[in-house]
Image (cartoon, rainbow, N blue to C red; front, side, top):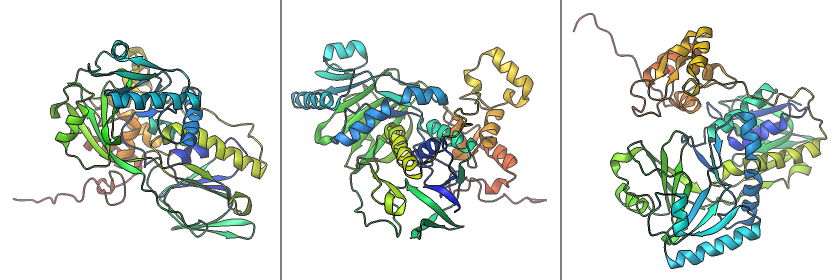
Length: 464
């Protein structure tokens, strides 16, 4: 038997499951087809930790409530950025007032704590920049923001340090039941294992039942506002719009703000800005630092363990916008199921701590000087906008599951997210990555295969 457990997919849930299982005496591997783990997570460094108010599904709400309650302990232990900043769900019309009251009653029935309905005037004392047309708001104290990529990395790095084998750039082709085990065939190898946890929604193999693809998704239009926008919110703001469309305003960790509009329709920038201005006052094109267009999923997420007893197969189906929130809950539930099935014991030497990371920007001058005395590369600023040093970039490459792409460095360090958008530091980052990995500069990729940063060298001539 090659492994006790194979986890398919190195996304946030896959890394969370790997971390929980690494606490036990098991031989575990994670198979990920991309260059890096958590490649499916948005590049935006701030995600909402939901409290169970939103969504029509009671099951998803229970998972959100359970996951939300675990975030303080997890993020403190992992040293991952997390803040409970609270949220306001606002209603601007009489029709939306009645809808919001129904949402409140449903939330109370679900057991959501620390919520209340407040009048528009009180909402504006909590959040000064709210517009005058707010009639009432549902105020929640438990909603928060977290850095999702940092969370995934922390899960994965601790799992790696506790013996989990991460097989990157390897794609699963099929899974079959054989005798008393499972055979997993990839584009590089064939493995046998006792159990498989499939965390990749949409990927089906011989062992899977036919699953109807979900169409429960909308278009998520995201604008990152820069420092020129001065009507900054301190809480997460949700607005109930017409046609079941939604407007979000989310503060980030670096004092910017995210404005999002969710709709089934295709809208132009001018029309989206008009919709956003109903909630967020006076946004202009000049305030927009970056834009992203993604899909906003509302599928039910289910831990399908019907084939666990007979085949040793667990599949996590569905895709949902609150995946970050529910990951701790799902990871715990999957781990408990596997541990009970395999009758394994906890490790006595489990390392429940992430290797330390030094963020030069956040250090005092004394701490900076101490680091520079140990490693002079902490004195070389590569990203001027965000004060990221060469030593930080080198560290993110050399760490467990270190960066192997430009995008991997960007996500781990925050480089290129400043005002210049990488115009100063991108080429320097590429040279450092090439040097540290022993690759040609021509072979450095932005994110995935076929995304080379430099296609070829410019020919050199003796004469022109």
